[in-house]
Image (tube, rainbow, N blue to C red; front, side, top):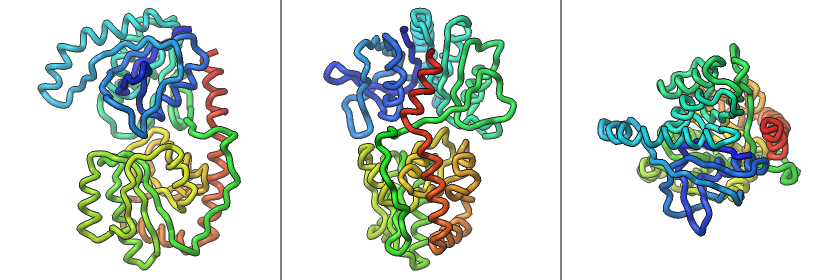
Length: 371
């Protein structure tokens, strides 16, 4: 089987191997176990690998480079209009040569793929929609357009669209799905942390406005003012790192708020196992892997009610939903810290639920889809 991936994920090439953002590649390495050849249509722009990148495992890869594009400014739009015909032709040709078409959405490449796949109604297709599928959420026009085309059974045939969460009025194209990080063999016995000593919080994700890392810092600051002995470890990098550094320095938070940068999966796993709480005040998510990962290691998530998070947390049976009213959120977190029984119950329920979603189970489900 020739498996064609259409993705906006930026790749790199080093030592005769292709690499990209590790959560994406790790997943594609599972899909690729059951195909003979990978046909990847994507941009290349990474000069060197770092802690968040890994290589593809497949030995038969035909990589077709395209220019990345966007419509963020007049200049970008003009350049895109010049580039677009070649990109469209490249995607069409790749789909024609494929036995199975796989779209990674939402994204600019995914949007083009949504249109072009219409011309291949008889080919088996999958789309991984890694964003928020909630039909009530406010999203850019391009995202809504991708969702509409993928859902439309007249335009899109022979397609399984893997989405996070279960949503009313979904068409037969839509398949509720999940993602995973850990193998069944990686499970270890976990003792739910006690709250008798320093309370450890963590944030894991890109340091961007959409993830609201500053809000996490401000929560910790107010909890400290209440006299709670705590610390916050922030994992990740991004455009807001300098803003966070300035805020931490200006408000003298250096003794208990730490910017750890990008770390390997093993280092993040260790942090989950040592932390009491994960804070994720995101504006938008798909399947927030960090929430499932934290629960897997007995770390209780505190997150915003976006995408399928409410479902993951069983409406707060397995964690806490942020209101984004900082005084209310701080009071509720304080209440949980001082109620050891409530904390243990939520963390235990999260541990049990999340351990169903292993990479072994994920691979079994992928194998079913491809067969």
